[in-house]
Image (cartoon, rainbow, N blue to C red; front, side, top):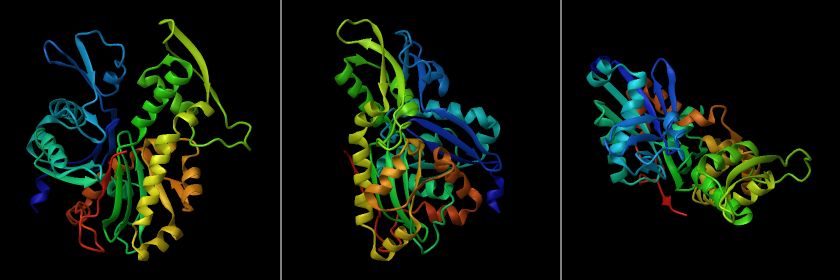
Amino acid sequence: MGFSLFKQDIGIDLGTANTLVFIKGKGIVLAEASVIAYNVNTKNVIAVGNEAKNMIGAAPPHIKVVRPLEDGVISDFGMTHLMLKAFVEKVVSTSSFFTAVRVVIGVPSGVTEVEKRAVEEVTRQMGAKEVFIMEEPMAAAIGAGLDVDSSTGCMITDIGGGTSDIAIIALGGIVTSTSLRIAGDKMNEAIINYIRKVYSLLIGEKMAEKVKIAIGCAFIDETDPDWVLKYSISGRDLVTGLPKSIEVSSRDICNALEEPISAIIMGIRETLETAPPELSADIINNGMVLTGGAAFLRGFDQLIQKETGIETKIAENAAEAVAMGTGLSLQDMNTIHSHVRSKNPYTNVPANTAQNY
């Protein structure tokens, strides 16, 4: 009965690249880049979200543009607080937020207890009265419509901006998981490094992301004459120091992404290898679901299926799955308390493993 006091129930996907906010009864009401810009002299916030992202690489010296999360965890506590507060105030009235709010917020499965407490603290500083930390693969599975409470195992791979979280889930808990600090951001870095090495051209993060989305792919389908696409990119010529534009192909981007893609597939294989025998057959029969923005990389699902032998599907709402899962878990408190636990329902020991590549 006490829970009727809560005027707002909120689910948050606090991602390295993007932040999404879900409000119970309304769905996803905000999706913005996890970026904040502030005046270095006055410390006043200039912009947050997509507006701040547009300032990357173009801001004058007195304006600093930062991404306050790195590899899925908070790297700048103060800026994360200001950014998240600004996001929530866009969609929740100040009076209701500071009087009664229950928040479920997603974190990568490999974060430490200290990192989890940092997320909880930054959420409470906004005025949240009750905070639940949910591991992102669990949230993604719920958001993708998987039956996480069944005794039949399901497998999820959530590839975001900062981390790739791979998990096998059954009986409402994560049975085994792997968290890699390799995802969309590392793909962008790989493209930047490749273009610098091969073409002696320095491009920015935004340009790398644009070319990845436009023509990026996980493998080259030599049987498809339309598979290899071309895209014009601009940057600074490292030889002359002058602006320069060149044309690159899908083959270039595929070569650039080989290392991060291989690392993610290795993480998937390692997770499959640690699955209890009882669940291995379930995964073979039911396959694996991909979520997260990087899941849309052309051919990624096909390559994973080829390398693992597991049928791989991209969730319909892949980019929104974590936010949807945190929001849907607010439907009843029993669901929240069941799904935020981090115990392995098969062995009653912590399920998570974190790896840095």
